[in-house]
Amino acid sequence: MAHILVVDDEKNYRTVLGQLLADEGHRVSTADNPFAALELLSREQVALILSDLKMPRMNGLEFLQRVQADFGAIPFVMLTAFATVETALETMKAGAFDYLLKPFNNQEILLVVEKALAYARLESENDALRRQLKQSVEHEILGRSPAIRRLLEDISRVAPARTSVLITGETGTGKELVARALHRASPREAGPLVTVNCAAFAETLLESELFGHERGAFTGASERKRGLLEVADGGTLFLDEIGEFPLPLQAKLLRVLQERRFRRVGGTAEIESDVRIITATHRDLREMIAAGGFREDLFYRLNVVTLQVPPLREHPEDIPLLATEFLRRFAGELGRPVADLAPPTLEALQRHGWPGNVRELQNVIERGMLFCTGNALQPEDLPEPLGTPREQAGALPWLTLGRPLPELLEEVEGELIRKALVSARGVQAQAAELLGISRSNLQYKLKKYRLE
Ligand SMILES: Nc1ncnc2c1ncn2[C@@H]1O[C@H](COP(=O)(O)OP(=O)(O)OP(=O)(O)O)[C@@H](O)[C@H]1O
Image (tube, rainbow, N blue to C red):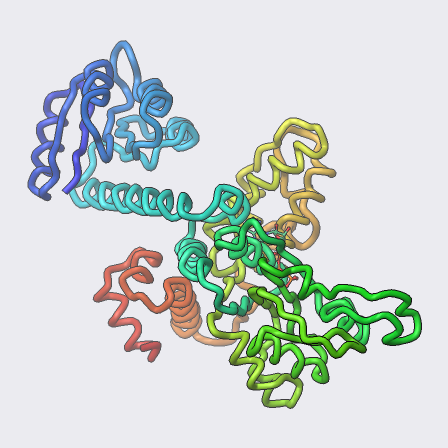
């Protein structure tokens, strides 16, 4: 049950809507003008506002702005009898959750109300979650999709412990950001976070970097050097690209994990260090183990918890948010006003497959900003083939003619269902919501496509 405020100067609409929502178990307040509504909002908590657009003295848009300024983000659904694209766009741009055209049918209203309430619940959960994480982290990992929410949830769950965490995910998905978030949200936050890219060092150099060396341990070792494991004492050691960690050194790393001790290169003294080890890789370590390139015992020590960072194509709903934020950042760096995203540009961004993930998106926006001459980023500003129109690029390039249309459509449907399930981590109710179909319909389709 939620408290819903209906604002409309027409009595008929207030009554019909009020009855419909009350029948659904909601508590409904009504107001026949925005001033009375604002007065009510100052006294009572409201979960959702349904407001008419055209009202005398103050219209729905002005009312929405006042609500946002005075009461923050209360989900707002605009009701309008004027079906122009401009008003719809303007309404959404002003921050309304949705709009409905009058006359509406009951099903439509209830669906939008449910969606808006679910969204508000999610937002407030998100808020709580983000408050748990440190502010700095909140600003780094952007995204509101279920996939990113789950990631944030997992981070806040595992951050407090000393447990080793293995972060997996394709290149550019934000694995390093996750490692930083884990450190910052942990009790080790005040300690150092030391990052080592294992792929960047040859074996001997990596050994002396990590474990340190005694004076004279090898040619050129003119003095004793502390290893990064010592430097990270009391904090976190992040070993990026752990798949590249040389096999001969793996036993030594395993010992650090088991006994928290090690020796410097050329040294005999046992050195103790209290570090939490976080690792990341885009490689399949199990495959490497099977091929003899990675120790299984080390894998199990590193992989006490795995955090999987989703590829961008599995949370495309975050693209507008990410793109807008990157536009803002680059504008700041270039000392230019923040450009808008032209609608066809956003469409092109959402159509792309993003093999390079968020990093690729960031690069595309950065390049786009350099080429952008107006006040909105246009498709021409994007690199090929992103900028090519849909007709040329082909909306679904992997689909080719030569098979019956029903078969092709089934392939598309099956693929989308599979995607939704992956994105919802197998939670059917969520997958059904993503697809905009009922759960029973989804279950029927799962059977049909043998996706159970
Ligand atoms: N969710 C996100 N929100 C904001 N920025 C992000 C997000 N994910 C990635 N980025 C940005 O994308 C870039 C790549 O991220 P990061 O270096 O963490 O990826 P990675 O998975 O470690 O990549 P690689 O495997 O290639 O090392 C960084 O500039 C990072 O700030």
